Image (cartoon, rainbow, N blue to C red; front, side, top):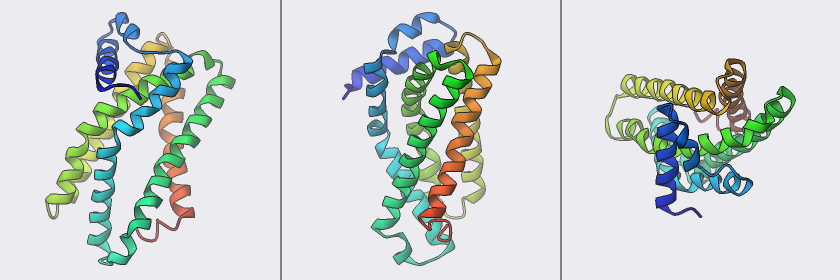
Length: 199
């Protein structure tokens, strides 16, 4: 597992890349080993992920005051939705990249976005705290979630664009795949696990 100092080093590299400084690429490990190690980012975002589950539990209870519907099984189902869609999205993206002719960039894109998720997920914990502790904050929470989505898409676009050398078509294809597939797969998995009736 990468040490916290290593993760901070990767994030610094991402910041340099976002600023258009090519030396930022040297901060990240784009090897095969680096690809597999980048999935440790899921461990580093575990606390904000669990916080988002608590926020969703609060939302469900506000809509349907039935504590039995949000027991321990509820959290396992949410985890299945999250991690199941991550696997599906990654495989889909690798296939799209290969047949789209930009397979050589696919691993680097995944590595960079995996580590980008760490600071973003921690920063977006604010919207979950608002949902949990501020009653009647639906409008505020939705506004924060929309802003988070826009920021994530913007930063992801910038990083992908730097990695692929400014190819707008490749960047757009990557971004669409990495944002549309998770939405569809999460919906399908949630539907299969009977989460949607609860939500």
